[in-house]
Image 1 (cartoon, rainbow, N blue to C red):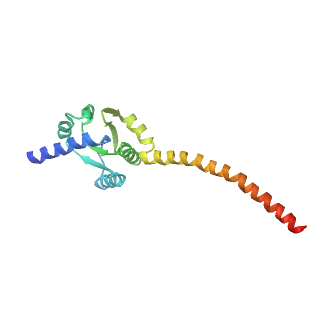
Image 2: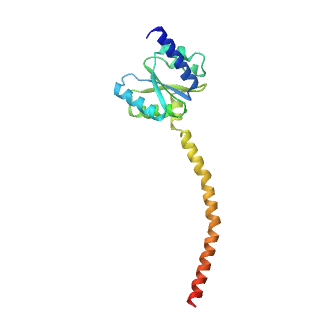
Image 3: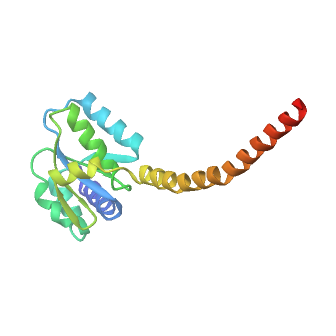
Length: 172
């Protein structure tokens, strides 16, 4: 990389650290190109991105951001997974790490909060924002459905009583 390319890459990476909902740092030593492409495609499908960056450039890009506490994670062959939704990057990275033992999650950051590997793992088990919205909507709809059923029940019972009297009158 030339100096101008490095400067541009550092600027781009700095913006990523500032704008991302969460960042996951993982060691990828021993992963094949096909496996790395698989991880990238899974992350892209979920709405995130995976980048391999030189540690020195990543540390420079971290300066002046809220995520500056994860600087010490950049040792050896590391990659960065990030997304705007704070749940996506940890979830996809941990799912991939379950099937591929060569991807080792080291930690990450969510805003100014520095996460260790266990925190990233627990963050991956939380439901996404869309799942939470769906559950909340389900909870809100359930009482309305029950109210409608309760209100409609006496009317339907009354209709059955009138129908029974009508049949009784017809028979007589």
